[in-house]
Image (cartoon, rainbow, N blue to C red; front, side, top):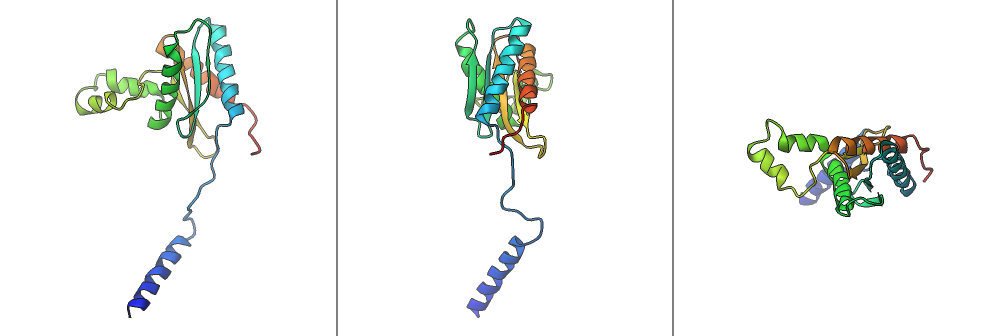
Length: 171
């Protein structure tokens, strides 16, 4: 009797797992080293065009740094700030401008503000998620530091746009 109920239960689980549309894995895209380098180079080119000195960083879907370039003359700490802006954009799944608004905006009082400030992330404009065009999933992020926050964000957006225009890898 016990054996039969256990067997029935296992069979029910098997049938649930075999339900059409239920998947254990999903295909996704990933930022390659080539893509990260291309984004950084495009960000540096945009910064030079604007007369800025910045650091541009790109992280992968785990929040780990793939590529970083700190221009000559930029404060050394900007390397850490740019990398953390990228990581924050990835982990919070939005531009860091939205996080900055959550801390400094009109509705920034109370527990929500305390939670954001104590999260240990860089909550300043200049971090932009990299979104896979086919799935809509966030697969990385770009962070920029060195000039005013809106200028950092403009450089990060230019870097991401340039990377998205690159050919896809055949990996």
